Length: 251
Image (cartoon, rainbow, N blue to C red; front, top):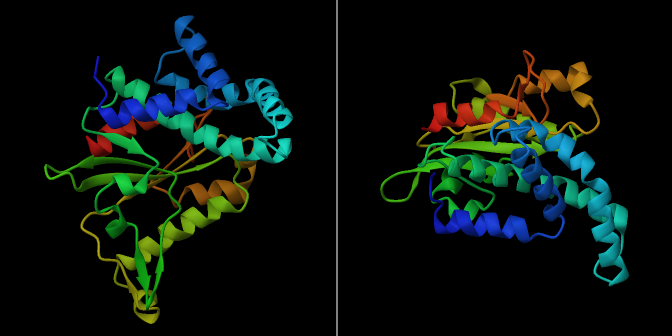
């Protein structure tokens, strides 16, 4: 079993101590303890567990509202949905790493400041202005001096409405910035990178929007797209595949 480093242990504890994550993590633990799932395939259970935890989380929010900590229950639930997805990803990634399903030199974080030199590969200049990607999680390896070596930029969405388009548009901009073409010259696009990041997308698809042909078309712009359900098709992969993908691309 791999021994997590200090940052990884702190991240794990912070997630476990986040009030709305406790019922969610309990459900993952039950799955593993009852041998209904292993840690790799637990990634495909995120949608199911988030849905099944909604009542428990709502009760926690209602308690906080009574104490004056929360003013709007529905708004709190919306905010929690995205944060819970991100926390589930980090938690399950670290549990898989601890079980040695993920190579020890591969790290995950939602904190861009933790990744030395990340800003260099996450900034595209357009004339005097800059564009930066939609980043929810960074999965990466480091050089001997601690600087960034290779990385996957992962965008997480509970819904495909509107925000998914932001991510693939940045991916298109990155492609334009790294190839010889008249658009790059026309808009004075500059992208000084030392190694191309891998751009991925993951969704829980709460609203079954992947059945929309327009949404399915967006997935083709990413290096890989994943869904937190047991679905496998030509345009999207189950999130459990993320483990092998990470090991193959970064390991």
